[in-house]
Image 1 (cartoon, each protein chain N blue to C red):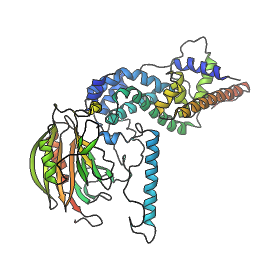
Image 2: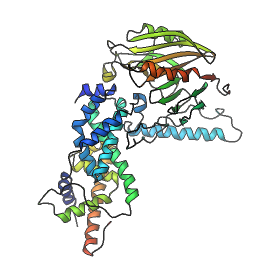
Image 3: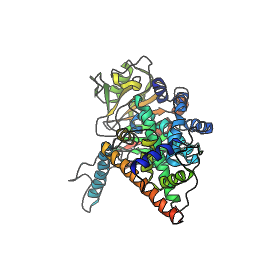
Image 4: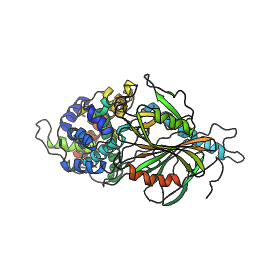
Length: 183
Length: 315
């Protein structure tokens, strides 16, 4: 941990703050991109999270927790952005994924398309939990700490998120089978 | 039918793909925006939802409910405020986090800490509604914002810095046990405040002089902390260079306040009809521009008029 940089940033040193967040920005962006599934919105969320981090840095009591605090900020900002977007596009057709389609023999194009649609149907909080678990590899205890919820709640929400995406995938498969148009 | 294990494996693979590098222009914009966004002091930042735990949120939420209940109780026909009902002391309430604008402009901070405030102030005369003694004042710039109007604490914010008023201030000392205790040998009169800051080993007090504001007398000093200062509390970590000594003697959202390196303040202790009111100005610009930013703050301070609780401020 860059404790000196955290302390300098807390005293208002902008250069120290940028030196602190620059090497962390790719990871934060990757988290945002997984939750929001949109490059522009992920960039906006990252911007907002970093500006909030700058503004509220003096409220961080334990500088050793800077990384965890930053991840919590980006997740919370993404959930807020996704909630707004969800209200706005609830009736719109889902757009294709923005990220590159890396070749992966395990996942077919149909799998990806189905996952994309199923994932976008989930509430933002469930998306965030799945990203924390399956992208960052967080345990339910770590998810609980990041989202500031009890561990039992994290476990049940993770279970519910799995159940929800499974239901979304199954529903999508049924729609595809009868030639329906999803989302 | 998709099984749990299938879903987990699919998600692992699927989420592993995707963009992992942010475009440089995003960080350029962040750099531009933080240049326009000032940092919140710890006591304000720590109330935001990104830092408070679930129990505190619940407690604060209950406090908000209590305020509504108290206000409702006191507004019942035939009831006078504070008579026969629960204590009327306001408490901090939760607030939505302000989301910064996508364009690089300074984010306003209206009422983000306690439930009551006037928000953005138009040039002209204004007065507190909760802060007691009631204070009226005049702003000539359009960039002042009242962000806290609490019985014990009042804040007027601007891009240049902010004014913090404390109705019942007390002088505290941070101990090695990381607690605040009343500073031994000091009362709360204006002269006590000046005696304390001039004798404190971590403070450099300059420009000490008597003041008269709205017919009330007091003492003023400009304070900077010394690099040699180390908090006696080892756990203070990044706050170890901050001389923490301003608290409220009554329940309030103030916490402890002080002077940080490179953030000089103007401190005025005023005797308002036997009650000390502390007025401080914290400049955002650091040492370099303190002299210029304090001039505009002092104009607001000089326009302040105090009147007793329940009374009407003179025009």
